[in-house]
Structures are given as C-alpha cells and as structure tokens.
Length: 429
Image (cartoon, rainbow, N blue to C red; front, top):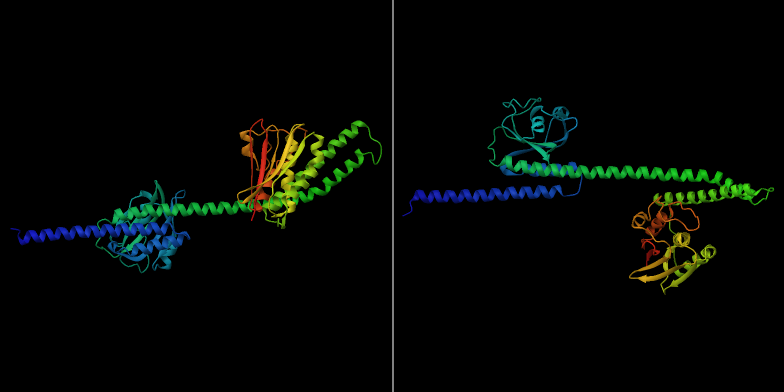
C-alpha cells in the first residue's frame, strides 16, 4: 500500500519537474525574443533599449526597470556609458561616462571577462563609486564578449539581497554573447556606411576635379592642335620634311589628348549624375547603318569589310547620342584591332525581352586575363591595334556606364586567336 507520505513526495517531484519545464520555456522564450530584437533594423541604441526593457520583464531575474550598457574601448581600456533605461541621477550619468578597466564593478568585469553578482552596493567593497542619494540595491554585471573580444558590459539593478534565480548566471552569459554579436554586427554596418559615404565624397571630389581640369586644358590644347595643323599644312610658309614629320606627331598627340579629355569629361558627368538621357522611340537598325557608314572609310583603309546582319526588331526608346557613342566604340575598336583583309559583322537580334546589338571581328581575340579587365577604367589590354592606333583605356568603361543608364547590359566573349564579339542589350519594352 502507498502511504500518504509517498504520495506527497511523488506530487512534490511532479511539481518540481513541471516548474523546471516552465522555467526552461521561459528561458527559451526570452533568448528567442532577444535574438529577434537583435535582427531588427534600426539604430544600435534603440536596439539595446529594447533588449534591456525585455530583460526587466523576465520575472525570474527579479530585476528593476533600471539598467545600462557600457561599450568597450579595448585600445584605451575604458568603458563608455552608451545606453540606459530607468531613472539615473545627473551625477551618475556624469561620473559614469567613462570607467577604466578594473574600476568598480563594471570595470572589474571588463578586465576579467567574468560575470559579477553583487548583493548590495553598501556592503560590497568592489562597489567603489558612490553617489548622493544612492539607495540600497544589488547588481547583475554581465560581460558582453564575442570570440574572446570584450565588446561591453551590461548592468542590471536588483533589490538588495534578492532571491537570486539559480540559473541567472547561465542565462545572462548567453544573453551577453548574443548582445555582443548584435553590437559588433551593427558597428560593422555603421563602419561600412561611413566608408561608403567617404568614398562617395572622394568620388564626387574626383569628378569635380576631372571636370575642372578637363575644361581648363581644352583651350591651350585646342591652340596646340590648331596651330600645329596650320603650320604642317604650310599655310603660313614652307617647311621641310623633318619639320612636317615633327608637326604631324605634335598634331596627332594633341588629337589623342583631346579624345582623352572628352572621355574624362564623360566619365565625370556620368558618375556625378549630370547626364540626362534624351530618350526617344527610334529605329536601332537605322542608327547601326549610320554608324557603319561613318566607319566605312576607316575600314577601307585597312581593307576590312563591314557587313550588316540586321534582324526585324521593334522600335526602341534610347538616347541617340549615347547609343551612337556605344556603337561607334564597338565598331571602331573592331577596326582598330582587326588585321587587313578580314570581315567585321555588325548585327542586331531579338533575345527574349531584349534587343541585342553585336560586333564580331576576326582579330587576334582576347586572353582570359584581358577579358577580366574589359569595361574597367584606364585598362590597356595586351592586344595591340593593327594600325598603330592609340587607346585612352576609358572607352569601354564609358560604354558600360551609358548602357547601364538605359537599364541594359554589356558583354564580350572571345577565344585567343579566334576573334572577339562585343555586345550590348537594351530592353525591348
């Protein structure tokens, strides 16, 4: 027969087990809720305020609605008060703005990395900092650490000598780890934002400088180009063959510099957002034909055949000046890098929801290394022009920017020794 005493013991065990299950659920719940808060968007201080507020509602800890977080400066070995909830005196907020490692309760936790549970601010000798009107209270002081790095310290106020929750240290250390990761994540995000803002400022300054420098150089360069052309053509008097050769070199160099300045201006305008596209519905095939006609003479000088292969495509909305610059670059480069007695095919076609324009040549092709450099600023490829032409290294970079402004894309594919195909696409709708 089961005695009353045995029944009472069994009921006690059941109650104890049920209480343990309840506490475990509460711990899981608070960990889950804090983790959720740490993944929300918003400012770091707002996030930490929510976490501290939620902790004060965790009944088992028996804490007040009074808490704060110090952030650590590991280099200077000090804690700086970052966020608080509850009512603190002006004296506290002033004196606790910065605490050296090892000083008072929070500084000791920062130095040791170990959690402190303090029963009373009046009887605990480690509580060195006293304030006017301070009332008796206890503390949980929790290190915020991640992978051995001290990120900060969380302090929670309690009543004096409270009934400490037996698992408080374990649960608070876990929360401290979550908080440390959350703080580091927000700090990294803020650093990235600051870096991006600084890069944008530097880029804007660079574009402004390029614009000013390019404009200032135009006039003297124009004078050099014009005067050298007049002199080499013997318009102001006879010159000998040696002089004419030198003047020809001056004239060609000034033309190259002029093209470089134009490209620099284009880059700075695009990156600073000062280019407004004048988009109109037009015939891309007609634009392609016009560009082939303009480049025909240059191709004939190198005995290169330009062949059109135009599909039946719908009218498109695009900026005429921008797209002829793109087409001209592709066709001009194909002529520049193609040997004599070869063919270049200029084509259009429908590809799903896009219209594709391509230029395919029979030139030397591109190495894998060169293909990685395509469409980047100031990149001069190992492939050399076949007629001694020069390149600024900016043309394809400008092409990419102009096409992207049209919500299109650019690309190229090539095999070394087997020609190259450059293309861009524009949305058909």
